[in-house]
Length: 300
Image (tube, rainbow, N blue to C red):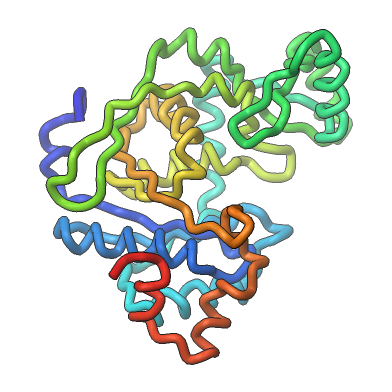
């Protein structure tokens, strides 16, 4: 990758599969896990397993154990120890402190409903922009609040979210790109691709009760674990722009990416953890063999 030190390019490839224990795994997870496993093995690389359990309200121990059981049943082997995000909150606090030192963070106090109402009000003058996931962009109203007032409201115990000042961040780093690769050894590169984090607006990087978000924790974890190849679903393609921005702001290395196809249900929607008919536990209970799972996800 352009700009990457020679020793990093020549190092053993490091892949990772990083599910959240907020439900049972389904066929879409099997596709991603098996692709990571197959690609790591073909490249003579390492496969890490990471448990992304920062959402304390939805993550449960039984779901985490089910992840280990399902992956082992599929024949996937990973390195120990497994990194659990909930055990590394200080790493994310440190990253937030570095961004705050660059004056790139600010607290916002509106609820999701209030943000939707603000966007609807401003949208009367024209279509209000939405992020790649379809949510209305944050209008930036909290930027007008003085530092003293922000501190008063935080000290008073008001809920808040820490947001990245996207305009200031982009002004600091300029243009960004990432390397997107095809599947397997020797596959053609499709990058570098331009990164457009501005499409997400002032993204949330932490909340009062949780010192991180998906965007921040995944970037910090990949760097600390030495991940060199991120293989994940096409639904996270646009999020990579935010990740490249954070990597640059924090001085972290950039992995190479591969965004694979998604498995869809009969309505053409991405599989979800509530879809019991595609759950690995249910399929295993029905007597489906791991080799059949590979066929079902199109890997054999």
